[in-house]
Length: 391
Image (cartoon, rainbow, N blue to C red):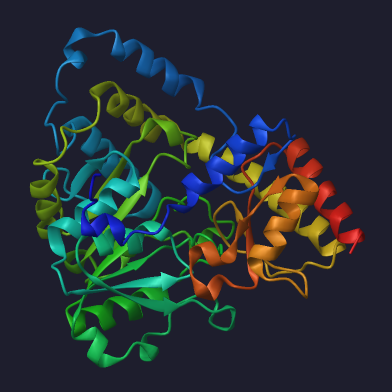
């Protein structure tokens, strides 16, 4: 019998693997399941990105170990710098403020292992992305959950975090535009956050893969726009959602040079970097894809409006989130989050995510992903409506 490492025993089952297992089981049972549970865009990656990959993959020079291995190709890091300057007005040094990632989840792990010691406290939001907690536990850290409440616009209240916790805290993980609530931070919040964190010597990690999916463009922000943020912060971003490239596994960490250096030192011992061809295709996406972002954003806006109107007709109403392609909706009266999502799965063959998958403060909510085509979304909403009519 194999005895697992203690760190592995601490980890809860990973949410999205459980959801994918449910999808596979439903398909094996012959059910016509519609999944609104996973944020995986149905539309293909734009053709010019695929064509770039095809052409550069044919070049034998790209068949060897990745150039600049763990850091990422210089041309990739330069493209990231151009993209951040153009999209967010943030000036980055490609040499020491940018690190290529195989997706954001890798960046979360690299930060934890490079900068967090056993016994440190890591602040995570509740509700929040489960990978923050899991990676903190793997690093031997203690996790302190900071509630995100509707009454506060799903923003953390700094004054509610005890000072004795802050004294032991190494890092605070945040995510705006927020998964799962759709909330967005504003410049005032980020300015207060940076001042609060600097006073307490807390590092900030902003998970920002939905940075371009903001319906009110005044809320499209990078934390690095705030004076004083860079030295204590790293921002994790990705091409996955922005360019329909979830399967490509390409992203970036940007921020303070000391933080990036620490992450690089860890990464050079555990990974050999991203395939050159994927990095070069990502350069094409970042340099040529601004129009694609606007098209994709308009698509999600249309689906959001369609879904909110239909849910309102069922008696399920919520203030629309300002960003992401998710809806964070209250469950109907009389159900827990898990009870309602199981009811939809069993009676409607529609899979949504229970709010409690993101933490205890997700109770009373369920999350809907808008990444399916309009016709399939309409069919799923129709099924949900029929279930509620039978109550």
